[in-house]
Structure formats: C-alpha cells, structure tokens
Length: 211
Image (cartoon, rainbow, N blue to C red; front, side, top):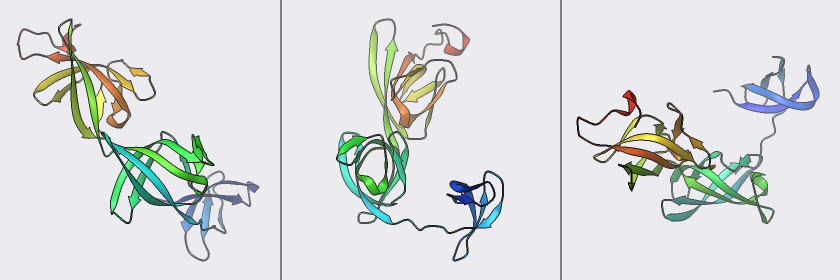
C-alpha cells in the first residue's frame, strides 16, 4: 500500500499542500500528485513521535496504556485507533470515545496537543439483545463477538441455544436501522431488538411473512 502525504505540487498547487503518493522513500524521495498526476521530488518532513496516555474500557473494566504516535496525527472521536503499548506488549484496536487536549474535552485534536485518549476496545464486544417472546415477555440476552462481526436486520442470529430474528438495531449515535438488509458492525451496536424463534415447526418464519 502506498503511503500518502500532503506537500506542494509545483504544477498544480505550488503554494498549497495537496495529497501525494510516495513512490520512493529515502534521501531523495519521489512523489506523485493525486490531483494532476505530476511526479516530482519532495522534501518529506519526518514528524516527531509522542507518547500518549490511553484509557481503554473493555466490558466493565478500564486500563491505562501508552501508545506512540506521530505528532502530526489527527485524532477524532468515533474513529478507530490501534493502541500498541510497548511496555506491556498489549495491542488492541479501539474506537475513540473522547479526547483531552488543552485542558478540555474536544472532538478533534493533533496528537502533539493531546493529553489523554479515551477509547472502547473493539477487538471483541458484548452485544445486548432485547429478545421478545410472545406479546409481553422480553429477555435481555448477551452475545460476545469480534468487533467487525456484522449483524443484519431480518437475519437469524444465535445466542447460545436461542434462535433470534433481528427486527431493529440501535447504533451508538442514537439512530436506528430497521430496514430488512440493513447491516451494522458489532462495534457500533448499542442494542439489538429481536424476536425469539421457537423450535415449533408450526411457527411462521420471519422471511415468509409478517410476525
């Protein structure tokens, strides 16, 4: 995969930085402008490295780590980050939930200005189902899955020995997905609403008609 940087292009943008692909690293780097395709030499600044405090929550516990990032890295709430703590050897993908920079809580910040990163581990997540049985009884069922596991509205899902049909998914920003075929990755799920599927052969299938 080509590394991308932003530098001035002598052909189309001599005074403003634009995106470039790095074709050749080293003392005499070559880059290709993503705007006009011009290949030219460039001076690539080597960003300083900063060590940042990261507080990672996983289930009901929180742990503090440190991770090294380029000082110019732009961090943003709701974006993913891989935490690599050299002291403990812990490597974990997280979803950034908050940033402390300049003595206050912010949505976006450069790494060099950031004091603390708050995040939620997304290598594995516990998803909660509100599973309805009949017209009155609702049971909360949990299922632990990889963060990139996909839940689909209208699909059947198994939690232990329980068969569930997903009817609606609430995502972490408060919105819902309720159209059949809508898919949401587990790391973005707040709660899944579902109906229990009994073992009785007389029950109607979700896919064959209404509830």
